[in-house]
Length: 309
Image (cartoon, rainbow, N blue to C red; front, side):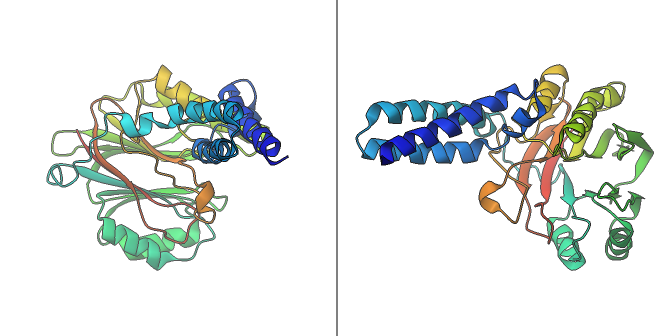
C-alpha cells in the first residue's frame, strides 16, 4: 500500500511540474511553473523511499521527473555569473531592491538593512504615504536624489540614490502602475535604471496584466541610448512563461544565472520560498555579485546586485 501511495504521489508531483511548461496556453498552468525546487525535493524523497522499499522501476520513473526539474534549476548554478565582489569593489555599483510590504511598520529594520548594505541606488516597492515619510526621514541625508510615487494600493514605488541623475521619467508598463526610468551620467559612463513592480498573477485578469507588462518591457527600453538595469518585484520566477519569453525575445539577461537559486518571497513560508524579485540587464552590464539581504519585516527579502559597465 505504501509503495503505491508514494508512486502515485510522485507521479502527481511530476505531472504538475510538467504542466508548468504550458503557462503560455493557460494562466493557471503558469502558476505551476514557480516551484521547481519544491518539486525536486519531493520527487527525490519519493524516489529514494521507493528505492528503499525495493520498487526500483517506480523509483526510476519518479526520479526522471526529478531530473527534469533539476535540469531547469541547474543553469542558475552553472551559468556565467562571477562572484568577484571583493575584487571589483572599487569599480562596481551596488543596487538594492526592497519590497517593503505596505502594512509593514519596521522602518528601523529597513533603515538598518540599507545602512549595512551601503548601496548607491535603492529601489523600494509598496511605498505608501507612511513609508514615503519614513524613508525620506531616515535616508534623505545619505540619499539626496529621490523620486517617489506613493500609492495606497501596494504599487507605490521610489528610487533613492547617492549618485546624481541627468534624466528621470515615469513610464507605464500597464495598468497605470508607475515604473521609474532614471538615467545616470556616472562620470561620462552613463546607464539607465528602470525600477518596476508587476502585479501578482493571482487570477486570470491579473495574470494577463502582468504578462502585458512583460510584453511592454522590451519596447520601453529598446530606444534607450545606454545600457539598462531593470530591477524590482516582477511577481514571476525564471521558469514561468512570460519571463522565459522575455529573455528569448529581448537582449535582456537574467542576473541570477551563475549565482544559484536565491528565493525572495515569502519570508513567512521559507520552505515554499521562490525567486520573484529580479534584476535584468542589457549585455553591456556585468554582474559581479548578487545576493539576498536580511529580513526587514516584509514578506520579501531584499535583493542586492553589484554591477559594472
